[in-house]
Amino acid sequence: MGKAVLVVIGIVLFVYAVFDLVATPKARVKLLPKVVWLVILLVPVAGPLLWILWGHIKDAPPRTRGTGGWTPPSGPRGPDDDPDYLRGL
Image (cartoon, rainbow, N blue to C red; front, side, top):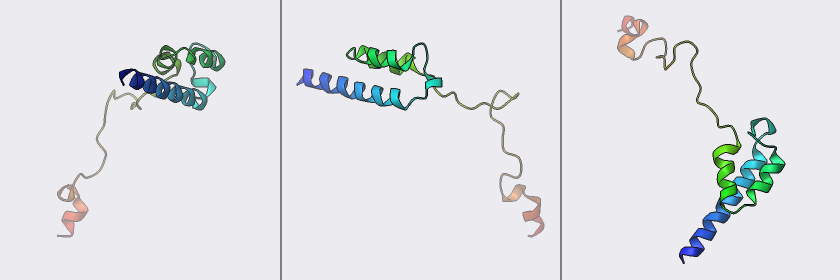
């Protein structure tokens, strides 16, 4: 039973890596051309792991320019901070 689970995990990993390789644009592939990566994927377990870890460029989280971090939104935060709301009371 344990060997069957390992085989299933290997197959799932292979299928995921192949679809990810096909869906990844050529500009986002690192190190080697897509055709070479396809050949590398044929190596059981190690090929798909290499693709997932080093094969493509991951999306970086967006950064704000110049501040180095998160900035709070401008404007009032609640009704008691809004002068127009307070004027209507």
